[in-house]
Image (cartoon, rainbow, N blue to C red; front, side, top):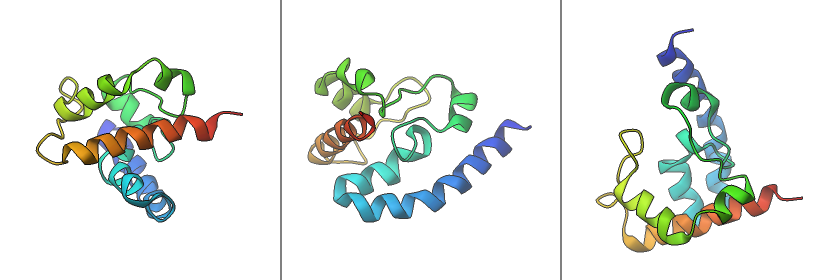
Length: 114
């Protein structure tokens, strides 16, 4: 299947889930849904179509993946971006929004824990 078609199909599926995520999560959840969920998945588990297209994407639903990354590392990644696949958000989000987004990421791993 064409890579662009796979990504498009993944995004169509995502659109149906984003509204529910936004309703559940408040401001930080809405930031995540708008800026992160297309690649990192609505629950923190990476979108498989995006992984196939771009390569490895951290699984934020996995508590150990988050525990291995201090807030400063996550804030830096969101602020400055990572490589050519993850854009920098320093001009799109305020420092407060970025910190709220990182705090929200921490909740994703806790939701999946038994």
